Image (cartoon, rainbow, N blue to C red):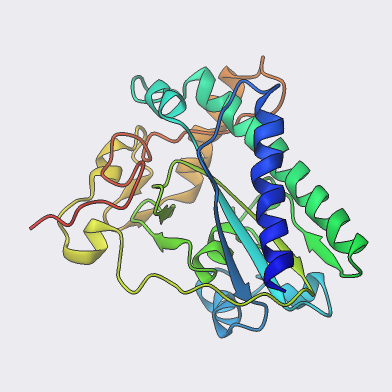
Length: 257
């Protein structure tokens, strides 16, 4: 099984390298983690996220493992989004191209697993949410948390060893792979000791605050950016202002006293 795990990870690395040859966006080395499909934390998402949140076995009856991966953006993409009220063009391009990359990675992994005699299923990287509640019935970030890739920040993004600027993908398979360990401490400085909260200050339209996130106000900002970036080859309903110029943008933040 470890041999197959290594081959899957090599495939992800190689696919990113190949995709980068023709894309405007480049990515750092991916972080990859694994969760047991029957991990009790998946069941807890019905209380934490939504009663309709689906379980790995809803997609694949024989599910054994949820493979999650984080694709970090490069400094060029991150720096491009630091200034101004609206998202940068490069940030929008990175969003669109990374969604395409996630689709191609998942399709490739699924085909390979089927070729090995296993089964696999996956959910689109984005635009798979309830348009009224603005809540997804499969949270890629929550799956990545359960797979040990990071912990959630005040901005509701996953803070990983490579920060929170990037995109998350996931795939469900009946190939059994040993689960990776979760972080044993809180990575968000505000949640850890109240010493930060900078992401809330970075929010450009008041959707994110110390006491919570106004999803509808946030979504309105995403749609505004999508309209402004409508000339791109895909929907770039993005923002990302609360991810840049914060201690957790590109790595685990240093604990502040």
